[in-house]
Length: 270
Image (cartoon, rainbow, N blue to C red; front, top):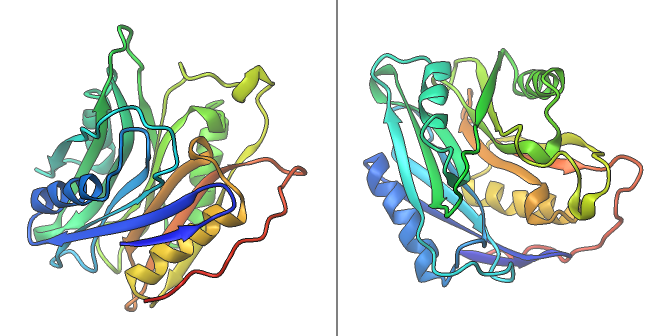
């Protein structure tokens, strides 16, 4: 684990690798608990790997200075592909989450041409359902797919504040780039404090041969660069890619014309 100072939050990251997806998912939750992370302090959990036959990997980003909502009790549900399309997988998972507080919904290619997707959540005391829906985009390049996803959300009238999570994945290193976005129209479209809905969905991208630790650290720099708070982070998500490369995206709620100019320290390297 590594801890960094951003202008708004000290942000840390963790990673767990295992031969099975469930062991990696359980392991990343254990790492978060061991680090003293509380409910409400997790920014992101993401599934990825180096190749379909490679180890299962989950990364997490968190901040211990975010307000605590009590002991961390993250639960997860998963779909281990049995011939379902990504759209079918997303629709199945989102139907199970209407009464929970979702942290992330994240998928990856898997061995034997299969797919896997996990939803991490905190059980909620809500008495009314929060219906979650999703859109997917696919393209031959990652940024084209990311731009298409943002356009799909705009076409459906989804505001940045209503996005639950955005996830990157594919069907293998040499396959098309894919994104899924999950959103809840019942979430307020206005900004904190009741101001009118403003801003857009933007992203920072890494498409690189650098190691995963370097990419997690760069994602922290992106959070710092835009001085994001927790609710402005819409996804910190990674995927394997072709040619020995991998991608990591930070999707965020941006406010054009009102960017906050900040300075942040360089990230210490081990």
